[in-house]
Length: 639
Image (tube, rainbow, N blue to C red; front, side, top):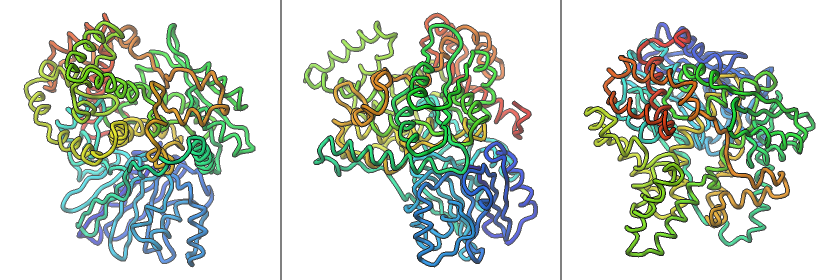
């Protein structure tokens, strides 16, 4: 895993300062690849690379070219089927000079053209320069495991694994804000889709590539998630065996490495099961890592991680995170995430990957199982509410009122969102697994926003077209499949995976996610929904496949993940910090929010804790401004 960057001038055979720019860009993401760096500068194209050495330690230096030097690649990620591809390409006459997975990309492009992307199995962000056609290809893996950003003008395209790389170019100019993206952040608690918070910096979407030939720019999709019925006529036991075989083969590929591989143990089903498979793929002692939290009455995953460690004989390490650790890291959280994302568990991931970096360069985690096999409770809960609503027939409007009344007084309002589900179409109800019309900012935008931002909210065309496009693509599949598709295009790449990449890479650690291998995702998309959810039992086929493989204490426990107790910290140890940041004169003068409403939300949260997510989101946006807007030219010393 590494960091890549570059710039392509469309109408220039050479440009002064390109070499120093590429060096500045690579330096800005040193943490992504502290082992080495490499450059390619020629005729108006500059490519840069920071290397974290994982495979082929001696000869895998990038950029890598083909035999005559006409095709050049820099690449971030791993190609898990590279050995098979290499054998095939050698049989077709291609000559390899390294044993790296990167060189497979070069020769695959020579052999298959742009279709080479469909041959790759892995996680990747790729920049490929074809000098004969003066064509630049930028590509991102199918699910969005690896990030890639770009900026285009009439004269050039600029790209980087991190936004900081793009901001290193003086040609980019000052940071200008997308107000629509700020509104998207408060709609979703992250910013989904192509647009970022900064104007003219876009994300390359998962499963897409950009082809640039001397100013002619095409954005093309090479993969999408399709829900089919390939396994609908299969016996359940046969499907379990197929899934077990697929997961074993996938984990085997993800264990390929010339450096030590460790496991991130959450104490949950998925990470424990993957560990059980991995133990059979190595004769080396495996290290495992987990995190807990100081204080009383907090859920503690360490107990279950220890059970898994003892069961499978890992060398186990733990770290304890305090409120002080959490608060002090917040500015660096913003610096590394680069985009507003409301994801407190990301800070726990940073600390546990920092611990892991003292022992390994590669971590494997269980992320992805919930997204592929419907593991989150909102899926089963929503389907159950729809079944109940159907029983009420023409009286379902009364059911909505009853549920609203019940949920207001039980569960601290957590389940109130399901009262909306009774009378709303899915596309109007379900924005993502973290958002819908029921969330605070969407319900109360007139009171929290200033008039300017309220108008942005009401007229946000980016949001409207984005959601319409998503639901139009899955209009002919079932309700669960529609929810899973929407989450695969929103929450997964723009919250979960951005956190996974940037918090681990901040510590120069590569994170691998076998359950997001596209073969696993495609398998899950082709099995009946009844095998994903049975009653209120989530992830049914996955758990049944793991039965007997992992301890029952883990298999049948309630899902928690990394339950960072930030709600309590915001109300206690961090309460003064919250007021200092959110009620600061400069923060209010940005013109986004009503000071009166922010004061009310802070006060109410101190009493009830019901607005912790909203408070954390407001903190994230203001700290982002401090780091990436107020200072204009970004440098690490600002943190």
